[in-house]
Image (cartoon, rainbow, N blue to C red; front, side):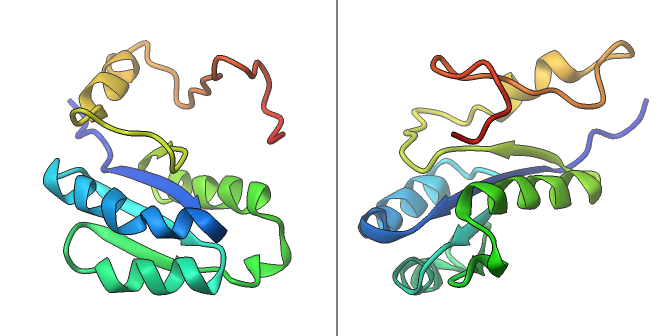
Length: 132
């Protein structure tokens, strides 16, 4: 059996949400969640993330200029890079609260010989790949 790929979560933060970074990353650490690629889309978010980096499996990626692209495009680029690196990549909105580690529940439907190589899931308000 092939070893499952490492799980990587990806999120992005900017502006007023930066004040919640400490609490978010504290919860991340408390649950011993897998690696988090944290896209800091402005200097305030980058500073707040850097203060907590090293206390949990978090990599802060400073993107104040957003590499010339808007935030909604940056998240798809980050997810693509993670997938290209053979990772099980999960995007999560920053305003999600985890009561427990959801990793195994998210992975389970994708295991087995008939599992798709790529799965896209919609939200309650979106049925498309549109970033809007």
